[in-house]
Length: 67
Length: 266
Image (spheres, rainbow over the protein chains, first blue to last red):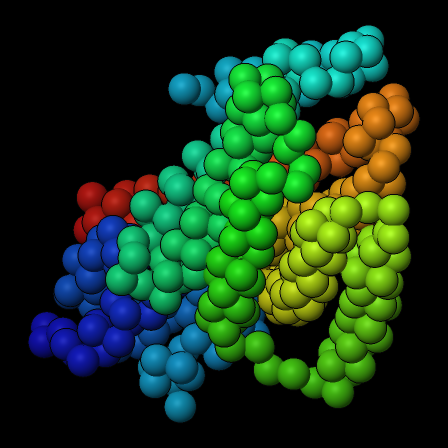
């Protein structure tokens, strides 16, 4: 399966900015063989779990993962 | 060190500190000053751990760099107070120590501002009105007691200047504390809610202790027993800062473990 490199890169940046470089690198590995919808759902779930639902959506918009 | 041991040591410290506050008559003793510098040192360890986990190159990491520096200046100031009182036998207020206390305010202000910017807060009319009202009350109180009331014609010019500067610092902290409150409200269903609520309370305690010091400086300076309990408020504030930052580190640790586990399974 071809991984969406641009999406993984945006997700990695969002995770690094929020939770640090080490965690973002681990997530990059996790996302490497996942499809777009799984990556977005996983990222949204992570951000919602830590920041709450509205700030999570704001972060997804900020990094242009959700429009 | 296991969490249970860490928390047991902190509870033991709190017990000893309160006990000494109650029984110790000589406020400027080495033991009292030594016990007092422990909370800011714990706070700086906790916040630095979070900063290291985040890294400087990240948005939250930048906020934590300034928060770490601010807290470090407070910790240096508290150590400076101990050195001034116990080893140099000079009056710690006003003195070189105040430079470290005062430098911490703008650094913390930048840190909290960057954290607020991270939150990407969307303001609603209800949120803006309610926080503005709380803000007006808090800034009014810190401004009145910390700046206007802190001026005392019987004090020296330097004492008044330093006191008023603390008041200005507290007004800035009050504004930023409200920005943090806006973030706390935003995070209300997330794991960051509790740590930021604890940090918010720690900030409030710091402001309360600073304002009390400005109002009752003479009584505190003369060593009146009741007013020495202000140290408990400051120490409590540092311990809450420490706990709040520790909780943020704990959340980051949980995320890290979770994703490593996922990677091992896949």
